[in-house]
Length: 217
Image (cartoon, rainbow, N blue to C red; front, side, top):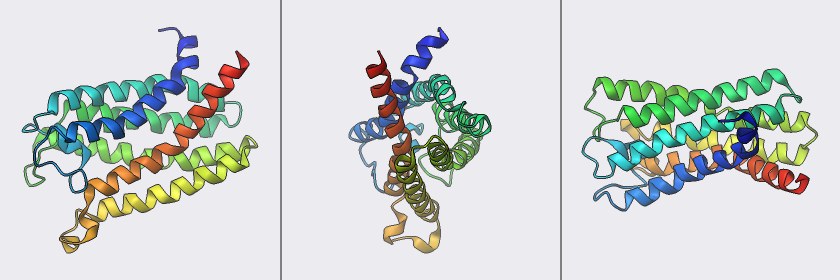
């Protein structure tokens, strides 16, 4: 695949990956009897007993590849602003793509968290590391935006970072026994809201770049 193709289409691949992560999980949930989008994590769609595990796992691998193919476009746009910060952003995106997406497609979590297998351990480690790093991508992009004289965009991105962190904390707390039978136990809801605000800065930047490239011809 030619690098110029990735420079031109990487932002579109990024949008497809992020919107697909939200939309496809909601669509597949409709074909999984007993699955709750508010109480169950997205990765539960790929558990061994899930009727939608095959399309879900295939999609997760595709999603990871889409994130990886978007990296050249991100790097090219921001490298002149700050090479160090840009390298950190693309590294975090790459680890998320592999650990939280591609690993999820190959190593499924079990429907019950009480059942622990080698696959679920690999899945858990990859997801935790990937998510923890990707959480800071909006913050780094906010800094890059300010350094690139895009103050308004920088403010929006930083706000999204703090909102996504808030929902991530709720997502982590939802698994604790002391919050059972409370609104905090809505693991699936907090995860999806976390993803929306974590992805939103990249979606905004991607749309902006696509428009800029179209105008430039």
